[in-house]
Amino acid sequence: MSLFLRLLFRNRLAGFGAVVLGIIVVMALVTPLLPLHPPNVTNTANRFLRPLAEGHLLGTDHLGRDLLSRLLHGTRLSLAVGFAAALIAAVIGAAIGIVAGYAGGRTDNVTMRGVDMLMAFPYILLALAIVAALGPGLMNALIAVAVVNIPFFARNIRGVTVSISHREFVDAARLSGLGPLRIILTEVLPNVVPVIVIAMSTTVGWMILETAGLSFLGLGSQPPQADLGSMLGEARGALITAPHTSIVPGVMILLIVMSINLLGDGVRDALDPRLRSGALARPMAATLVDRKAPAPPARTEGLLTIDDLRTDFRLGRRTAHAVGGVTLAIRPGECLGLIGESGSGKSVTALSVMGLVASPPGVITGGAVRLAGEDLVGAPYGRLRDLRGNRVAYIFQDPLSTLHPLYRVGDQLAEAIRVHHAVSRAEAGERAIKLLVDVQIPNPRARIGAYPHQLSGGMRQRVGIAMALSNDPDVLIADEPTTALDVTVQAQILKLLDDLRRDRGLAILFITHDFGVVAQLCDRVAVMYAGRIVEEGPTQEVLDAPAHPYTARLIACVPELGTGRRRLEAISGLPPNVDDLPPGCAFAPRCDKAQPECRQGEIPLEGGVRRVRCLYPETHLPETELEAAP
Ligand code: ADP
Ligand code: MG
Picture (cartoon, protein in one colour):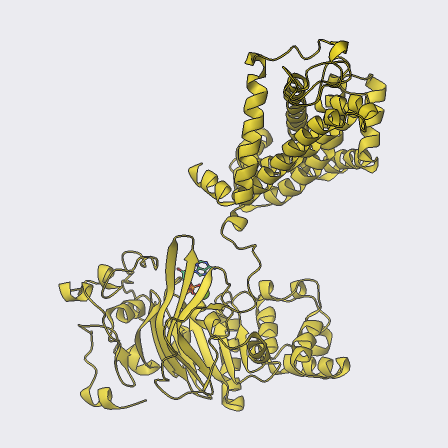
């Protein structure tokens, strides 16, 4: 709750709306206690007194009634009617929506067509027709406004319910034998309530306006009872001669509706978890760069070199150091494996290379990324766009979410080509077919017309690879491309990547959490823990004699086929929180060899071809190697 309020008031405008609305509501609540003139007593001798007149702060209306008193009483009534209408519409509309969405089939069809019929009439016309049928009066106006708003709630809530009632937890509840009513109340409703609140907060203002509209037309509150709409309606005749009689209720309506809308927007933003984390905020086209120090010199040679790269996520007052000084180099034709537990910063490292980390909240705070010597950190956006997908290409983990669901894969491949090359549509299409041949998709001429959902997971991943290869890149960054695939498809894809780098001299940065995959494909491997490289070296050497205790434990976690029963050594404890890393070795809290020195000061990554960031490595690296430069 306090989080909700904090988020709400972080939005200045919403805070302003809350304050204004709060004042108005409090005033409306205490109105009967205030020493006001009676609102309905006429005094024709005092007609049209100006504001600030003796005894009448806001003046009087055409019958000499005190405007301040009428305004407060009218506000009270308008607010009550507006909120009541919103509540009725929300409850009935949500009930209809939930039942229709949950039941589906014929029930859904019949109810929603009924709702559609209500929606087919213009809003105000329908309200007028209802009031005409029921007779004028405030209660009938309330009913009319509630009824015309029911379809809005029913439609919204039905949509949400449909998507929720197909989720696994609802299936699980059904399988456990719960009845539909229980499921609706315990599984569906809690997930729908935020949507109802959001819809209500954004429509209350409307409903107050609509009620005022009906009263303005003389169909709502009846004289002498005042509400804001009827006050406006009565003042219409004296709009020119005594404008204050219109301005007073008009300004009040404006304040109420504006403050409710501002507050409603704030409530919606604070309740929606995606907005809360800033995920729906449009990310910038390239990651924000805020380098405190000049770019460090390149440590080694390579086609792609990363030197002391630091990427933070600035989340409110917290800063997560997702990448804390990573140094890597990849030569043409080489495959470097980047391995580590989930959350260790592998993806953020990879995305930082082309400035693809979402900003906000991501910021590159230091280091350099060089492609053939050119520093890309802070390069102009135009330059990055030139290189992205052209010289440096990515393969992402989940091919279904990276392919556009509504376009044929051939068109998407052709688009990727045409972004960087001025070729005709037909030519791009031909190239797309050739790419599908390269990634060994059977029957490519037919497959080119398929939509992503018509392909299997392995094929989609191959399309993703084909797309990455479409512009013949120099560097390929593959972020766990085979994690979602079964072992046979995985083996094919690894073979494909291996052939490609041998044939085309592609440099590959291969991210994974699987040592088995690294062993098959990579020449060298770098082990990442809590945003830093803890060990690096030729794959076979690292596998045979891991130096960092973390690497050793990771390797011990890999099951082996055909070696009989062996106890798998899970690593106890959890990866550290990158908001708040301990001094010294980040792995020390989980390491059974840790000494007091391990928890102090910076521990450097030492060595040459093989490097390790550990004071007490499992294997002492040979002295000669320490001197050898890579
Ligand atoms: P992995 O090694 O599994 O690929 P990531 O590089 O994706 O891990 O994440 C590294 C750290 O950065 C994690 O602690 C993660 O929570 C954090 N992180 C990643 N993306 C974001 C984001 N958009 N906002 C905030 N934190 C993020
Ligand atoms: Mg990742």
